[in-house]
Length: 237
Image 1 (tube, rainbow, N blue to C red):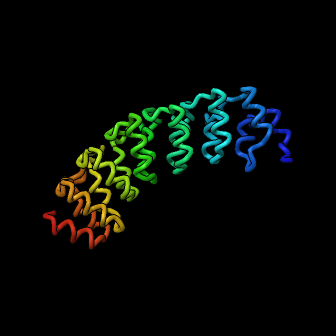
Image 2: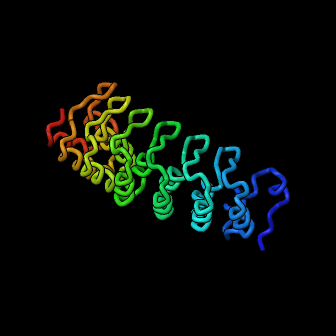
């Protein structure tokens, strides 16, 4: 049997928060959840037991917490919901569970990111599609005016990029730096396929950012020779 340190019990850390992080989902956690004790309490980071269960990929804990009425859309100090966290960690199955229980896909965190922004970093088109089909705005912008497409380009998530564009994402949307997805893709030597895809889908190849840099300028600055040659072959100046 797992022994829980007494300090955890008397208040150093909410007991349920501790219990849901254990490798083997603990009987004490089950008892506290079924009795709805501390079910929506927050730790020093503003996280509820659901945030921690999601972060630790505790399927049983997630299901049990939700079925006993926890606040599925509670936010932590960063404004992240459990769904934000699941997507940022690419915990696909947990994200599916949360969405099936009506977790909001529209809540913005402290930097204005909805769930789609988080998913764009690592997740597959399947999850992107699931979020959009449940009401996520494909062109939603965060506080930096980045869309999910910008972020997918930053992280070279080709699968997400292709799907977002096929679903109507604005390929020439600009952020606070007046940069499009093509600017970011051009900065990464491993993004040559993404750059070509963006060009073929009518990305503005000569758009200048706030520093007057075009995607070609950025590719050249980063010594991305192949990308620079590709841009030039399509008329970049």
